[in-house]
Image 1: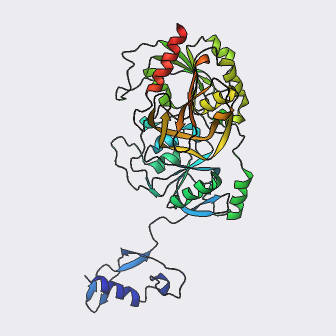
Image 2: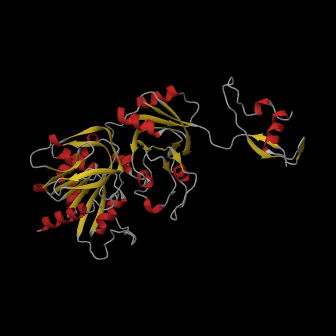
Image 3: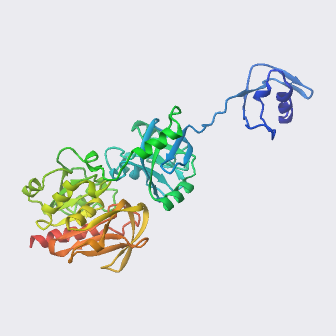
Length: 437
């Protein structure tokens, strides 16, 4: 068998290889062409001996850039695609979570958005059905630096790319996520277009990003359930907060589905609650006819000022039964009380946000996902700010004891701490207990 040097010399001098098939190294040439060496059936000879299975040139086997992310500021980011193909418009936000990408994919609060993961390596644990937070994926696309080519988790049922393809969700990788994140931090959340369509020019995609908007759009109606239902799924025995065996269903909670996550329902069930989930447009009068012990206003996507019907529903319910708002529910409660909400520069998205509980003088590590916040200066007298985000001092929690109201801007059902926020569900139980006295 000839040496590698002999094989290289053979390739360079053999008439069966054209000059266009060689590796180009000249400084005067604008492109560098690579080749893959494979065996063939012909036989050639060299001065050092014969090669029984000579080498031929074949197209490179690795994936090349076939997708673009065009941002509204005019920047174009070439990338490689995975998952679905096509063209999609969305708002680009970055998420600082190190893991939990499946929970992010199935969080309805990401509707209308492209999620850029700042952790560079994504996909190594694959996909498993136990980590679903809803029945489908709602986000517009996923942007990652490095897509893991293999999975290594005992619960894995399929790779991330196959999962996204089945759900028609676009993904791109091999793109500079650090540079894009810095741009988003400087400019704020940007609209963008993901596309694998080579027939569309960069100018076409830029025009699409300018034409589309997410502010003032009702995104809740697209993620809410269509009819009321009772949450009957039992919390698995492997969950650490599964205490339903020792606690009966003492309270009936009606949960408004603005994009509710399954873990919120599991958490309330473990605290002894029977839960009826209703659509976002369900009338307050119908809810009150159910005589609930408490009402939950869930998380959800988009602009809270774009859903005045939900604000009116909250107004009709507060003061009649104890209420608990999470994320979007927190913002709707703020508006119902007379306060105002505003769009943040780039929002809070991730599993490592420090929050200070003012009442207990303790810090929680929280999971957050929102682009809007309540302006505490706009709230009426009697409303208490209970939690503060330590990254920017924004309002992260409210309470109005006179009306049995409590709310949090972040997600207490998530476990980044991992159990820092567990006590808030107990506080809601206490609120309902006291209201019964």
